[in-house]
Image 1 (cartoon, rainbow, N blue to C red):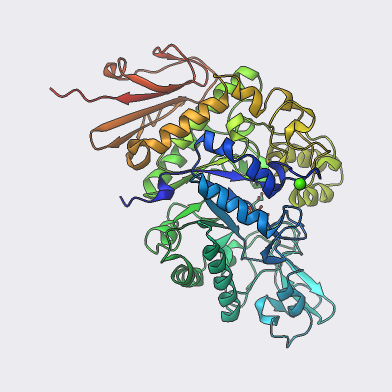
Image 2: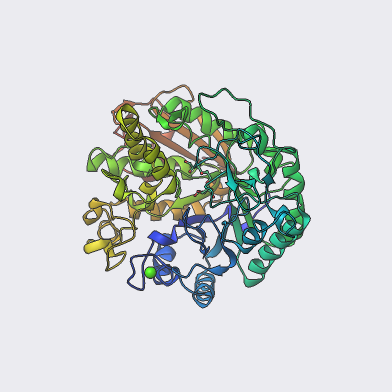
Length: 551
Ligand code: ISL
Ligand code: CA
């Protein structure tokens, strides 16, 4: 197994808008992050992934980039960025940037030009097409709006956008565009960044001719990933990008790749070595049926099967419970119904995921056991996806369904301000923040948890320290245990003559587990309880270091 820094690092994901406000405008910023670097050092993370910090009109919170080489003015200046990078590096923390090149903002100068005329040199940087009569060129649905096309009167053509109409898709068939993107990436590398998280990178190649999607649908538009995800051309683009930007550097590129499964994932990261890591969506989709809003309860057996199949499919996985697009981990997969269960289940989940084989990503606030937000009115929402959804669900049953969906799955759950202490606005800012602070901040916050050795925060610190220092937990093989057991998620990690066993009771019940007697007198290196018995306590996690006795 090839050794790499990014295999030995736990990555901490920072959503800059909600991390720390340093200049009293209610918006998190780069100087705010610099103020908190000591915290990251204490936590033991070795890399930070920043959500987009580039100039943007913020239709989709920075995922609509107006200028790839300018810092968003709300977040600070180029000097602030340089200082952040320098300070992180001084503390031995790498910096991973977000790379959003499936689409740009409609305010990017490429698009401003492209829109001007059919023979503009930038026309072909995007997808422009004549309508099909008075209708869109094809029937594709977008992630955020009903249709993936918007009509532009000036040239009487439509442009493609898989996301909002302010996020036109870039045309990767255009070689000039690809050159611009590679140069931009290389300039960031030359400044010293250590890698990229590549937004919906497996959607950049579209099927030639942009044919209609053929999935069954009730409405006029259908989600046509068969024509825009994992297309053969994708591999050509990624291989070229790797040659031009990544190959000769000691960097890490992790692709965000919806619609990827255990059979096609290895074409991206093993055979082709196009990416180092990928974020698939199979766990994120585990509790829904027809699209993300159609919630079904989390099922332990399904979870076990899924995690096991990914551990077996890839030699190296990305390990994450949540991110800025997902609800809070403990509310979703754990139990925030009582304080006791919240604490115990958050600790158990932390180990269950992060001691698997792969690179761990911890989303800000996960280490505190931050929870979903009790949204009650539309005015509290900020996310374009939730807003579009709720506005289209104007009445009756559907409105009910929409609110339930938003409470369970809405992206704003992840985006409320980081809870630093129990002062007004949770120490995130001293003025009203851009999005409300979760009302539970007075008990769930860094300061309170720092003062409590039994907190989730201290547990995460220990867990991260074990994960980043143990050869077994980093490079060791994985093997599932008790696969048919309906309460426990358990596995063993093995490296040379060392073995570590992880046992997680994923239920709130006391459950009996018959395990080999010889494990009994072994060292428990991490647990959320103090006394160990064959009867496991609610959400108990037990990590056992198996010492081999040489006869
Ligand atoms: O969050 C989602 C809907 O619930 C996903 O479908 C999401 O849109 C998809 O995973 C792509 O996410 C990424 O690209 C989007 C951006 O809105 C997300 O924040 C980003 O993570 C468009 O750039
Ligand atoms: Ca600010």
